[in-house]
Image (cartoon, rainbow, N blue to C red; front, top):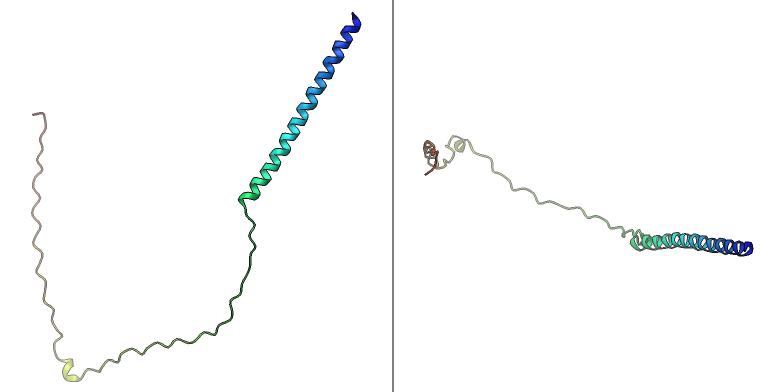
Length: 109
């Protein structure tokens, strides 16, 4: 009977060892798979773009010539005494109506 107990204990320990090994491998595999998928996702969202610096060909700037402003004639002494042109005046705005006293009704119908 002692031999059967020892064999049962050995089988139990072997099974425990297998479960532990499978658990460790599953955790390690899950961590590796998580790292791999994280790297794939990161590279999928950030596309590497080649930066090309293009220098445009040198162009000589042509000077811009603005047109001359129109000349204003000088006023003669006789026109200096003349009255400036008058504008027609707009009619004065009418006064605002006086505000009416507020009507206050309290109570029901």
